Image 1 (cartoon, rainbow, N blue to C red):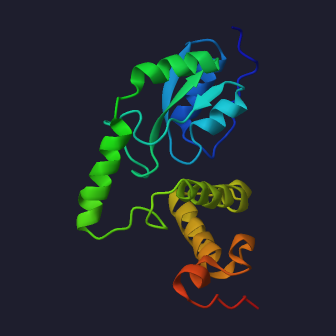
Image 2: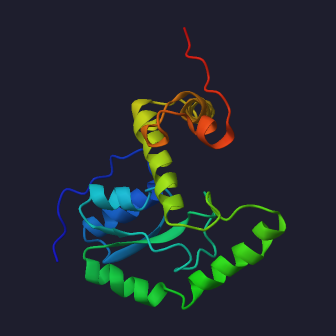
Length: 194
């Protein structure tokens, strides 16, 4: 199968290794590649290069050896030219019963011992992932993509300010016009800056 050209390596908002892997697949240098995906760093480069980017369900493919960005969302992702190729890789890489083992380890292991909730509603529902993806989409489109940070420390402080605004000052339509702090912690919204 001939890849779509030209490969696109212009995204600075995602991991450089994932961009390189996607470009290598799109250019036909390799038939497939593996990367990581936490909040789009596997799927976005695939989309920009018109190839398949697959983010498996959490725990389906081992993350042993992966440097974590967020242990509860990190996944090994697959870059391929077709869905059939990505599926073939997933069948080889998937660990039988891995999701069940990871879920049990979290539910009955360290998190339970530390009295940490498994999810926002305590049920481990799919909605948690939707909310997390929504937060990171907002961070990317309302903060990261609009700025040209000069340094990591500048990026960190600017994103920190945005997250405070997102949680304490920005009304959310899905929360009936309240901020997350108002909705979940009964804290008043920050006063608007004059």
